[in-house]
View (cartoon, rainbow, N blue to C red):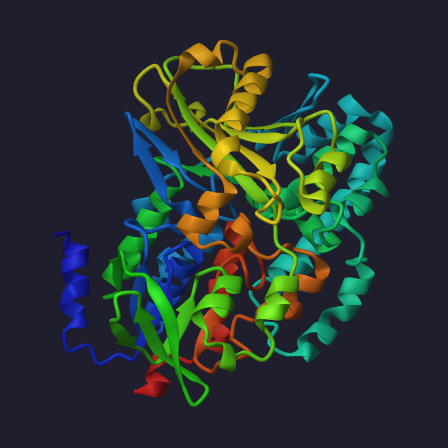
Length: 509
């Protein structure tokens, strides 16, 4: 037993602090637990899987370590805040390394665009592709910086619990033309189709279609340029382990293999949870890091729901599904960078297939993660670890993934072999896949959606499930499905919102 765990268990005995239960140990849940612990709450985190992390869990097999989910760390100051709340420094537990370039985008014609943090280097890349678009790119980045200032720095950690909160920011949304899509906004500034793709793909990182996601998400390039793109040595799960350690140091507890079957309610207030094995756990407040649609559709009694009814959840728009192939090779591919985006021959048409037509196309685009470009510890000596993530339709599509998973994996392998990883078929020594069916079964993601509710304007801010539940007093939501949305900065900010909507524990003693 570690010293931190022993401290946590000892603190549970006769602990007079008010009790908070957190459902799920993804980044949102762990960040919420740390913030609550710092404000005087005794916290129990309930995780149905056998390890913390949720989507950010880790797979280990045949000497390789694979981050299951998030791989791109931006806005690291949000992690530094959490460590400071627990009386430690992030660098004491986790080593972050800046990635340069952030990622490389390989177009179907073989040309490569490098996204970099240095503004001069980015302008040089723009000029290399299309000198005529340089002035438009400068205007776009000024817009991105202003959108980031308003949408992330000013509003990302602010609750939108009342419609008046939406009205308050309406002038800014109008000024930023938030009703336009990200792609439409980019297209007003640059003309080269490759640059339009390179500057507009970012919503896919949070489950959105660039042709439908609100222009508010144009903030991402400025966010990356200001705070950088980082990798945690040992993998993103090193941050999960670090946060779990902070929870323990604060006297909190993480229970693994604890599946929540229902949130208990009395007189309109959450009173705790009931586990699948029948155990009940009382709490003064409940924080759900489960998918927001799952929270309301499966954990909250139907008679307690007025807004998030079954009908409304059924009519909501959900993000795309994900096909993820984790694999290790017996050789190294030194020419491949840490993050590569491999675009197919179609952009708009492919996205329409994924989001609108719900069909699995023969062509596809993918994100290739090669952590061994930065960190040799995640693979045996002389080997490489990878994961290839392919956006695909969610389970609204009639795709038999039981039969399609292996043929689709082989198609991904052939594409990588032709483009980035020659000889891949003979080099693979370990392999596993996740499909939207696995997201639904393992992570309880409605419709197998990789990022929960789709980030469109009518499902953002006040229109999204609120951080302080509008249905039940004492119930709070964090994670990708609530405000401000998916991605590591979004889910960490959702926990930060709790500082404004959850009272300090001292007021309840």
